[in-house]
Image (cartoon, rainbow, N blue to C red; front, top):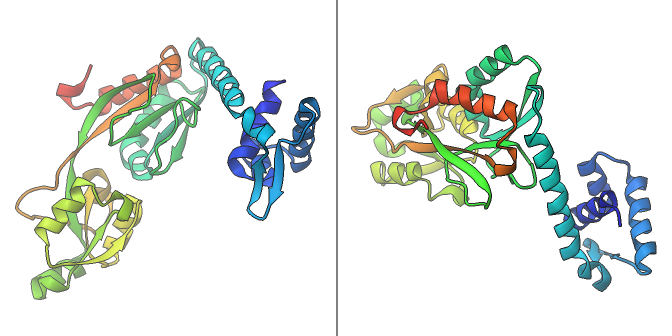
Amino acid sequence: MEWSDVRIFLAVLRSGSYGEAARRLGVSHPTIGRRIKVLEDEAGQALFRRTSDGLVLTDAGDGIVSAAEAMEQSALSMERRLLGNHERLEGILRIGCADWFAAYVLAPVFMALIGQHPAVVPEVIAGYRLSDLARRDVDIAFRIVPFTEPDVVQRRLMSMPYGLYGSPATLKQMADDPASVGLIVMNEAQSHFPDVAWMRDRFPGARLAFGSTSRSVQAQMCLRGAGLAVLPRPLGDATAGLLRVDAGEAPPSRDVWVGYHQDLKRMDRLRALIEIADAMLSTPDQAS
């Protein structure tokens, strides 16, 4: 059984259809069907059956999932180790982080990396979902919560200050009728974030006006007068038209963590990015 076929088997399992598996793997729909048929011919029985909800595993298919995932882990480990031993500073470096962090914090770091190592190509995978470093969704990730995955090398990079912001129209509305001002916050799943609790404590009678997982979207809604928003200072201060509000005390800051899989510790382009980020961003008492 070849890894290329097992990889396709897992993609179909996780996506529930040949078409979506083909899209994820960047191959044609017929290729997916052909390789699954090869696996089924080798097994002598069907591995998937069609239902109204898509493809689901047969008992035979379910019986090989653990072995397929073990093969996947071995293949990914080999890939990471080969990449980690790459001696030349060239190639794509996949970086996972929030969009605002890439745009307003890491952009100067990326420019410095490109300036020093023109053959390195930073590729940002932006989003709020946590990337899987073991599966190499990304090579390195920046986020505001510590990493809990095994085999991840991590450290605190910096302390990110936050501020309270509003548009001129919102600030005038606050002066005229404080109770009418809305709050722009994270979505319900992130309602535990410290800045959400801080805003609720500061403005207990205020209505929730807008929610989003994207700080960039929050900033734009704040700019358009939807309400007050707590934003990372690099984003809020750089958004023309937003005013920082003195609320007596600043919203809670957040630590920014950087992490990568230990198999990539010898990847020179990754180390180069970390060194530049340390030099440009690290909070003094957190630098290593």
